[in-house]
Length: 238
Ligand SMILES: C[S@@+](CC[C@H](N)C(=O)[O-])C[C@H]1O[C@@H](n2cnc3c(N)ncnc32)[C@H](O)[C@@H]1O
Image (cartoon, helix red, strand yellow):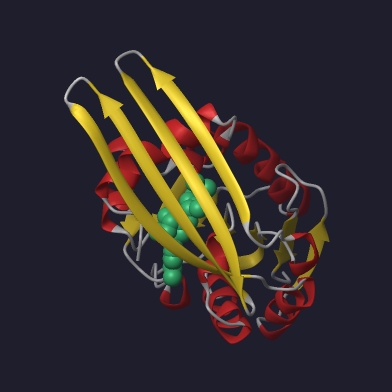
């Protein structure tokens, strides 16, 4: 798995500079949760990464916990919110030992599932953590028809005494995408470069709906939410 120490340290800096606003996203997700489950007071963020959404969710929910298998990302989350419980599980095997009024899985983390069956296993594991009336929110990635094969992206962050370049190249391999992420970091001490490779899946909207149905949930797709890739919201019956 990617998301080593160097990547974890640069993750928030680069995405914040690109305009990602975890607090605004958390507020919008909270609105969707409370519209369906007004008294929601607890939330589990699966694949929580550096905990940036969790820090914001903690402003809206009395109790929050995270799930994150990459040790370096988990450490950043734990440093950000002292006392925060972050379970080290794979999302297919989440076992938090309690139910929550909301479970979230944000910023295409779900597409790290290699097949539609793994997607269904992960959704079922998250659904098992929903209290009656609990709301599951899953942010997908591009569906197949919107993905651009061979897409290259780049971003440059200029800070006092440090410049960070992040270059990406995404290539389709069947129903999956191999994304090469190259960082170049220059500061007074020298220039450091490292590359990580992420492989994510191009699930269809139907793959998600099938996973929700198998977990006993009815999911709706809110197109155009936030970054343009939409949002799935599903609820456990009361
Ligand atoms: C793009 S980041 C999103 C992080 C965070 N949700 C956010 O919005 O900033 C994807 C995250 O998914 C995690 N991840 C990858 N594979 C996973 C798996 N099998 N189970 C749980 N999390 C996983 C990675 O470690 C990484 O933290």
